Amino acid sequence: MTHFRTRSSLSVMLLNWKILIIDASGQTANRLCDALFGFCASKTPNPFTVPLPSPSATAVTPPSMPTVRKTPFQVVHISDVHIDREYTVGSEADCTKNICCRDFADEAGEPVTDPALPFGNSKCDSPVSLADSMLEAVNSFDAQFVIFTGDVVEGAIWLTTQDEVTSDLIDFNAEMLSKITAPIFPAIGNQLVRSDSTPVNSFPRNTTDTTLDVQWVFDTQSAGWEHWIGNAASQQVDHISGSYAATVPGMNLVILSVNTQYWYRQNLWVYDSDIFQPDPNGIFSFMVEQLQAAENAGQKVWVIGHIPLGKADIIEDQSNYYDQILQRYKDIIVGQFFGHSHKDQFEIAYSDYSNQTAANAVGVGLICPALTPTSGNPAFKVYDVDPDTLGIMNIRVIFANMSDPSFQTDPTWTLYYDARETYGPLVGLPATSELTPAFWHNLTEVFAANDTAFQLFNTFLSRGGDVVPCDDTDNCKNMTICDQRAFRSQNNCDIDEGAFGMIRKRDVRGSQREASECEGIGIREIFDEIRNSRT
Ligand SMILES: *[C@@H]1O[C@H](CO)[C@@H](O)[C@H](O)[C@H]1NC(C)=O
Ligand SMILES: *[C@@H]1O[C@H](CO)[C@@H](O)[C@H](O)[C@H]1NC(C)=O
Ligand SMILES: *[C@@H]1O[C@H](CO)[C@@H](O)[C@H](O)[C@H]1NC(C)=O
Ligand SMILES: *[C@@H]1O[C@H](CO)[C@@H](O)[C@H](O)[C@H]1NC(C)=O
Ligand SMILES: *[C@@H]1O[C@H](CO)[C@@H](O)[C@H](O)[C@H]1NC(C)=O
Ligand SMILES: *[C@@H]1O[C@H](CO)[C@@H](O)[C@H](O)[C@H]1NC(C)=O
Image 1: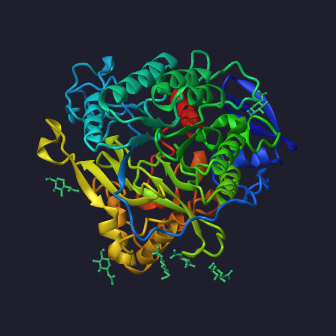
Image 2 (image 1 turned 180 degrees about the vertical axis):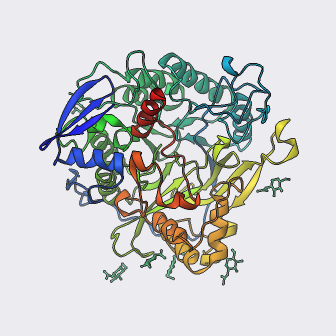
C-alpha cells in the first residue's frame, strides 16, 4: 500500500491494489489521516442524528430498586481466547517471527531458549489445552448462560488463511458445545485473514465494490451458533453482517450481539469512499429495530460486542451514534459487555459528558479480561444477576495463575477478586444495590482520591500477571480515570499517534499498552508487512 497527496485529492492504493481517489479535504481523508498519523482531525464526530422512535406515551417508568432481592443467578463472560492450533510444546517462545511457540522449518535444530510449555507461555497465544481447561472451569459455575465477546483465532495475521480461520471457528464452536452445558451467546470478533491475491482481508462495507467477501465468516458462525441462539437469530447472523438478537430461554432478556468491525478504525475498508456512511451495513438500524421491539414487549436487553465503544480504535462518529441509541434505550439496556483490550476494565456513559456525575451516569460497558496469556494471567468473569431487574449485583474474576508451579500440569481456576467485596465498602455500596453506572462513577471518584484503591485496579487490569506502573508521573492515572469515564471515543484521553507513530503517549513508559492495535488486521499491520517485505 502506498499513498500520495496531490493538491486536491488523496489517492490510496488499497488491499487489492485498486486505486481509490478520495477528496483530501473530506471527512474520509481526515479519518484515514487519523488512522495513519494519529488524530489529524479533531475528535469531534461528524454530526448525524440516529433516527429513533419516541418512547411511547404508555411506556412504564423504570421500577424503583427492589429492597428485597431474590437469590442472583450466574452468567459467565469469556473473551479473546486467541487459540493457536499449531502451538507446539517444546518450540521456541522467544522468537523474532510474528508468532512464536510453533515449529518453523528454518529454526529446526536451533537451541530453544524459552520452550513453549504444555498450558501456555506469556509470549504466545493460547494452546488448545489452556482453552479446554478454561471451558471446563466455566462449566463448573453452573451458569444460566455464557457470553463470549469474540476473538477465536491466534494473532498470526499474516500466516492465516480463510481455510484455517474457518476451521478454527468451527473447532472452537464444537469445543464450547462439548464442554459447556449452558447456552452460549457469542459475538463476532476480528476474524481477519489474508486471501490468495490480496495482502489483507478485512471487513468491506456492503457498498464497497470488491470481489473480496467476508460472508463466509457469517455463514460459518450462523451455522455454528444456531444451536444456542435459535434459527431466527442465526438467519440474522447471516444477513445482518454477524449481528443478531436472541431472547434467553425462560427469561425476559434479549441478548443483542453486534458486530463492531464496521466501526473499527483499523478496518481499512471504511476509508474506501467519500460518501459519508454513518451506519455501515445497517447495524445501528438493526439495533434500534430490536431495542424498540424489546421495549414494546417489556423486555430488558444486554448488548454484547467485541470492541468497547470508548476505545480510541472505535471511530468517533460511530461511537457517538451508538451512544445516541444508548441514551434513548438506557432504561432497558441493563448490561453492555465487551472484550478486545484483553484487560479487566469498564467505561461509563453519561447523559451529559461535560458534567460527569453519579446522577448523570446512564450506562456502563464491562470489559472482560482475555484467556490468551499475552496480556496477563488467563481469566474470565462470573456475574451475579438479579432475576427481577436482570442487573449486575456482583462480578467475580476467576483466573489461572501462570506462576503457580502446578499451572503447566493442571491449571487451577480460582477467585482472583470479588468486585463487590473489594470495591463496595470504598463507595459505601448498600447491600441491596446493584453495580449501577452511578456505582462505577463513584468508584472513579474513589480512585482519584485514594491511590491505594486505584493501584488495586491497575494490578487487576492484567490479573496481577503483567502489571505496569501507573501513577501521576506522566499523567497515566489521570488518563486512565478519564478513559473510565468515556463510553464515547471522542471523550477518551488516548493519544493515538497513528500507524507511523506506532505508540501511544502512555507507551512512553511502557504503561497501559493494550492489545487493541495488535490484533485484527489494519493499517499498522499493512505498513509492517510492506516494511518487512522490503527488508
Ligand atoms: C447495505 O446494508 C443496508 C442495511 O442492511 C441496506 O439498507 C442496503 O441496501 C445495503 N446496500 C447494499 C448495496 O447492499
Ligand atoms: C450537573 O449534573 C448535576 C446532576 O444531574 C446537576 O445537578 C447539575 O446542575 C449539573 N451541572 C451543570 C453545570 O450542568
Ligand atoms: C501467583 O503465584 C505466584 C507463585 O506462587 C505468587 O507469587 C503470586 O502472588 C500469585 N499471583 C497472584 C495474583 O495470586
Ligand atoms: C454515589 O455518590 C453520591 C454522592 O456521594 C451518592 O449520593 C450516591 O448515593 C452514590 N451512588 C452509589 C450507587 O453509590
Ligand atoms: C483506600 O483504599 C484502600 C484499598 O482498598 C483501603 O484499604 C483504604 O481503607 C482506603 N482509604 C480510605 C481513606 O478510604
Ligand atoms: C486530569 O488532569 C486535568 C488537568 O490537570 C484535570 O483538570 C482533571 O480534573 C484531571 N482528571 C482526573 C480524572 O483526575
